[in-house]
Image (tube, rainbow, N blue to C red):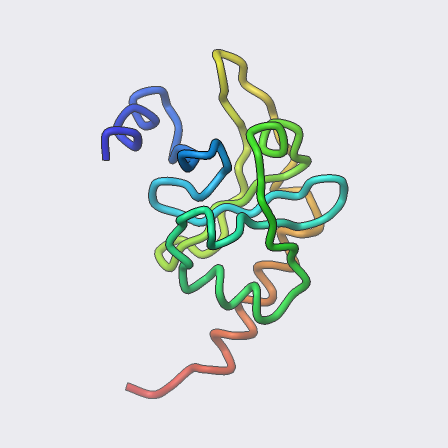
Length: 130
């Protein structure tokens, strides 16, 4: 919670978390997806991340590389997305690191629509009466 509080104080929604080996694991309250070199990726569960329901749905339904992700991957990503059950998929507009803010085109990237359409289709398929 300290990391999240620091991120919020700096004007950010969430903060990236790295494991003891320096590999990107997750954000404080979200799973992370990156588009690097045109490919959608998410960190491997072996990094110590919590797997996440939305992450699982996306992994089961669209092509996503599960791989080790580094700080370099994060800082050179074309697009970055946060996912959790509260907000679904959120595009990251700005990436702040080391006092430098980088504008991303996550909302405009074609992957965004693909992720949202996939989640909506899954939700519609599992809708129930209550």
